[in-house]
Length: 87
Image (cartoon, rainbow, N blue to C red; front, side):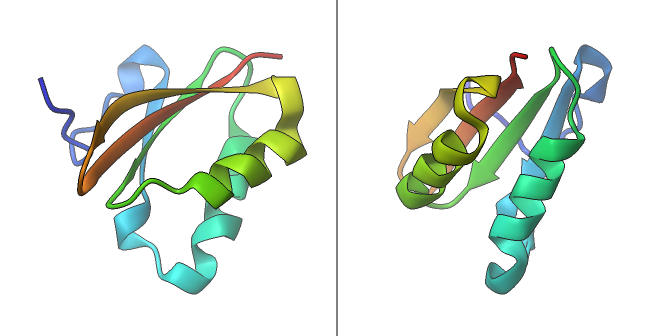
């Protein structure tokens, strides 16, 4: 079943972040800010139209083990990644 990023799922501690609606020049700063705002156990469900491999590397370098990443969908044009704040 495909995930619909326009549907908020906040009740489960999962916060949607649709990067497609954020201007490219602000995107990385907005993503890092959103991750910083999450508390332990919360998840940001990230949606994008392409696989952001350089961004994932930057997140891994900056946050280390604090943020766990897992793909929900990796279809062309529909990338959905959950970022869990672990510690």
